[in-house]
Image (cartoon, rainbow, N blue to C red; front, top):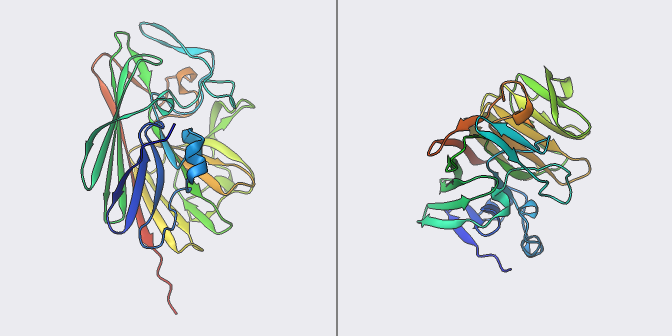
Length: 292
């Protein structure tokens, strides 16, 4: 399948989207230089026809993994099957594996929509705005099933990683995980995972949800000469730092991993027919000025 690409360009940065590939971002880069601000996607990545090879994809109607073969709602049980050959558990919802439709497009904005029946009926919307080197994304889900269900939202952006990449993202606690990478308990931040001050990314693998996030984040790429100032209205982020890879993932999400089976279902929204939930993610590109 040849993906149809849509684009926005504000004169400072340019954005390309592939609606048919899970409503994903293909590239976001500096217009004048081509400098990649998210992990760059080439033709080979597009030909792979999976959002996991692209720059960013939406997480609807949940983020990360769910154990137990599904989850319970007030009106009954929802069965979930594994949906990725690389993971034994259902992961990242269903929106990333379905084609989205273009519902609106202008010089500064693109709106995508998905009407899904998996794993229950819902409508998802993404609104992308580009202005002054700032990318704003709005994600909304509206529950359309007759049975109420728990919803969670997020994005899965891939950022370039070099030995000079720094991250600042203030959080209060971290969810520890078991061998299946499912959340087990909240814990005090280890020193190596405390990003109150801008610091290098950990050398050991991290794949954990952080709680009590301030909603602000700075990603500094010193060698590439820019910084991203990010913000979200979510109290959680998931940090994925694989070893020996040229990317890392900083994911604004509404809930920790496997929240459907944690006490009080932290961060999830119980939606009945016609009710909605939303999430915002903003990224501002800032060139670094170097004095002489």
